[in-house]
Every structure is written in structure tokens, then in C-alpha cells.
Length: 368
Image 1 (cartoon, rainbow, N blue to C red):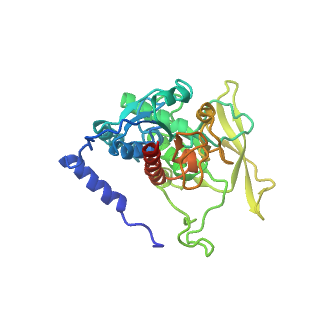
Image 2: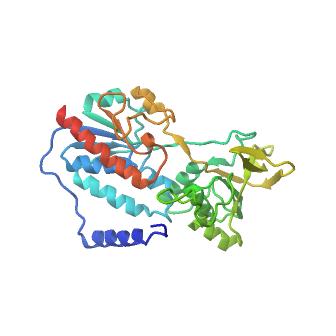
Image 3: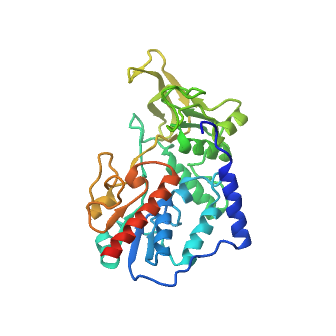
């Protein structure tokens, strides 16, 4: 159990692909309807999982999505080379054929209020994800060419789906020196996308040091292994440019912009950690050339205009508050699940939460 996983993803995906090809996977059409109506706000993995379960239980489910396509993170947050959008669309179509209603390009909390929805629906479920990204408030942050990673990834995917071509706007990495600040899956996706757009060079800044190749004694299973990994973006960049793109112990101090407000570089300093404190290393300043900077430093919480509109409480991290193991918010009939409740996490956790909230909403409606 301490060793790398077997290729379970490939095995399961092959089975599902065969199932769709052979027509074995069919819509689950419900013969009996309870008459209860549920609105789900957000169509990411938690929202889709909840919609599937509640529809199977006979409830009438409507999913609201602020973007122009269903899928949330699955559609616009994960690049095509990592998750084909046909895979997302075939599952959404299966839900449609099973009786789930989808409404796109409607931003609940702005275009329509939760008060209005409560008049039509018996329960609301917020599954909006953790979309408030951590920013980098340093000098010249307003320079053109400095973007949040998700903005870059989402616009590239949308352009590709709309036109069938790679994005050729100012957001494209083609011919540019690209710097990705921050790691994780999102940072790797930025590297992979920039490579495919034809970046001139790519560097990935990490604030922390290079992880060890083996697990430390204080990092045993079942804790997440804090070890050095080479993801697909790192491997591809190394193949193209000759080196792993990651640079460790680097902190960005400021951006440099020209007279047209375009980013042309940034300044860094090397750092270390002593007794849990970040220490800047003297005389380690460096200036880097760049025309495109992508900020991939994680996500803080959901955006708060929806919670403000619904008047629900937030926890100390800014997430929609629900008691541990529960999904009911501070407002009667309003539930929440996924990253917007538990914080930024994995898709499998969001699916699990979607199923969990569906069970509780069903109990709530049964007892109502």
C-alpha cells in the first residue's frame, strides 16, 4: 500500500468506454416522480453526482451553471489533453436523457436570486466549488500578461471548443517566455498547455524546497506522501527544453512592466525556512524575462456573492458552513457540498460529497 497505484484509472476508463460503445450504459429513466423540486447551483463533479442520485430517487432536479457549458471544473478547469470533453459531455447527455434539467449561462446570486429560487424549489444545493484563487499582491500586479491560472486554462479550453483551434489571443503562450508561479495539478496543467501553444521557454517557481525522493519517517501511510514527483507537464517540458522546469525556494518580489503596461519580467529572491519562518537569503535577488506569468497558488474558498445573497454563514476559512459530516447550511432548505464546503480537494471527494448531500436532501424532503 506504500507503492505506486496500479493502473486502475486506465482499466476503469477502458471498461466505461466499451460500455458506451456497446450501448450497455443507458439512461436511468424514473417511472415514479415524487413531485419535489431541487435546484443545484454549480455543475461540477459534486453537482453532477448529487443530480444523478436525486434524479434516481424520483425528485425533479434542475442544475444551474453560470458558464455556457455544463461540467464546471471538469469542462473548463482541466485541459483537453488530460480530460477529453467528449467524456464529460456523454455523461451530461446521459443525465439529460435520464430526466435532469440543465440551465446554462445563469449566474445564481446575480442573474436570479436565491429568494426567487426558493419560491419554485423545495431545496437548494450549492456546489459552486472553491473558485476564489490565491493572488500575488506585489508591485505591478496589474501588468498585462499576469493571469490567474484558471483564467488562462478556462479561456484556452473555451476557445478550443468554440473554434477547434488553439487560442491565439494575448493569453496565448506562443513564442513567449512563460513563468508559472506555484505547483500542484493546476501548475502542471499550465505547463502542459503552454507547451502545446508553442512557448519559447517555461519556468515553474516553487516557494518550498525540492521534496525528498523517499517518504520521511514522520510522513507514514495513510498520510499523503510528500515526495518528489514528475508529472506529465514536467516530463514534457524536460523533453522539449532539456531540463525540469521547476525552480525551488523562489519568492516573487515584484513584476516589471513596460510603458504599455505589459509584463516584461519579474524580480525574485531565494528563501529558506527556519523554525517555520520564511527567511530571505541576502544577495540572492534575480531578474527574469517573461511575457506571460501564470499564478497557480491554490484556491482560498468559494466566491461569496452567492452566500451573501442566500445569507448563509461561512466557516473560518470562508467556505459555506455546514457541521462536520453534514451538508445543511445555516438556512433552512439550503444545502452545500464539494469544495465550496470542505475546501479545495480532489474530484473523487467532490463526487462523494455530491452523493452524501443527495442522501440528506432526500431525507429532508421525505420528512418535510
